[in-house]
Length: 345
Image (cartoon, rainbow, N blue to C red):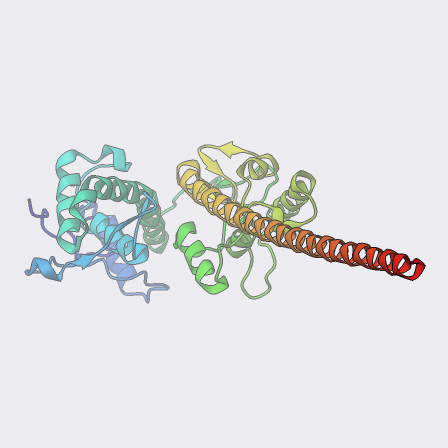
């Protein structure tokens, strides 16, 4: 089944999938906005064509059960498919009907290829990616609509705008990681550090300003300090003995799960796999250290056994020599006694 055409592929990013607004004022405001320079460009909305030769499809694999390899490129194409093939009154990915989902999936399959045995898992990961990108795509569309409304002097109600995304301590919930997933940031850090990053290192990368390395909000600093203190209290002063990330401690100091999300690391569904990966790494490192310690203990035991055997061998040699000395002494006594007898006679 082929894709339902690249509907709306050449339209402005303010229209998702090219649905006609049907309103003259909105159309006029769109034309006015086009005459003004754009402040930012987020990339092309033109749907990538499926290669005529299937062998030209890009090869990817499912990674960690919730991402593809080359995830950044895949997400870019998934977002483009969603925006250009958006053709219904859908408020969430769950509301998208099966026919349109299958059409988008078929187009994605025309761009990429993966091992056949992972086809079911690939569809699941693709669905998860679509589900995550849908709210962001809708948000950007709303922002563009607000810009058009303001350009046309439409009195759009913005009351309560400053209350969006407010937390209990009045700090705005945000990060500095951009559109790149936490897992991708972790992979980049691991390549740079030549080791898996700790939870604090990854959190700092996502919540500090690049220019000053300062945390972006007071709460970000507070959570980091509270976590490190709690880890010292739980595992001791030697940080080398700490796990890369202790999810129980993090939840305690960050406020727990709220609306399916954990402060600092995103949705719970994402972080279960993320924390599981950290736990696997921690267990592997711990097992490696334990293996090294066991090997050293065995080596020391072997050396001790060798020393004991050498001591026993030397003791046995001494016993033999002592026996030889005793035998010689006894022989000399006999000779001396014999001489005395001869002289007496």
